[in-house]
Image 1 (cartoon, rainbow, N blue to C red):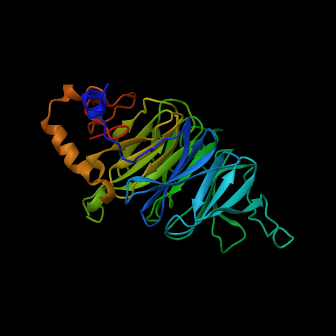
Image 2: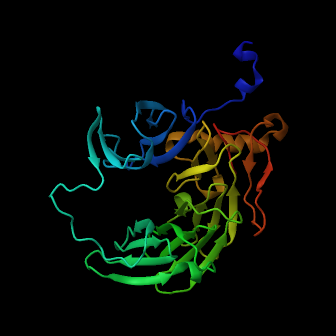
Image 3: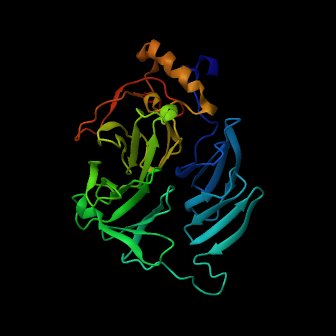
Length: 349
């Protein structure tokens, strides 16, 4: 059949060319300059870097082992470090892999003085971008914080018990950009947000699935985030669902449940309504929520698309879905209310 006669092809709109992997996507990150997207997946284990100026892949590299996590070391795509399942850190430059370090790295022939933690094991850690406080999420449910200028911890809190889940492990941790709040996730699907000056949580959010929390992010409401009336949100995720809720009062804003595969990673474009999700499926799923923020500059066409969709009949876009801002009930897990076109995944409004 000719493509011009194929209705599915005529309705298709890709956010980025070849934004997928043969089997699954594991990790997604945005370069600091906002010009590139890094993604790792399998099979085979591989890295893909996308050039947003051209909406297409920049390059692709096969890896020897699956990537557990990675960090971009420069503003662009020039250097990155990849922690792999064989317990090595692979350093990459523009031309490819150039150095491999076995963990731990004793480059000086000795261990450096470690932080004296009281936790039996650490599942997640994070640093406040505002004042540098270093936090550790323990398997015993305790949150331990360090001032890196000192050798001893400056605070220890049984965060799991405070959240109503005594004995549960902490599996995720994130400080907000203002330096006043920290959010932790538990292995049974609770997210608790604390003011650093208090031992009681401001809000506790239940994901309702009983699965461990994978990731927590704080999000500013788009271009108007500097306004005194602008809202700030928490975006938390487990392997089943992504929940967006209000920092101020804990009220549910909306939720996203991918239709294909379990969630591995969530990447939120700063100050925008674009959310990219890596799942146990070949396609990287994309959601645009206009009420959460504007479209990034490199895909500003989404703004016009959503306006156009509001004027058109939903039935002609029966294979796509849209999200409306809803007041989420505690027991509700489904927020898809009607179907409209997606962009290589989904358009959420």
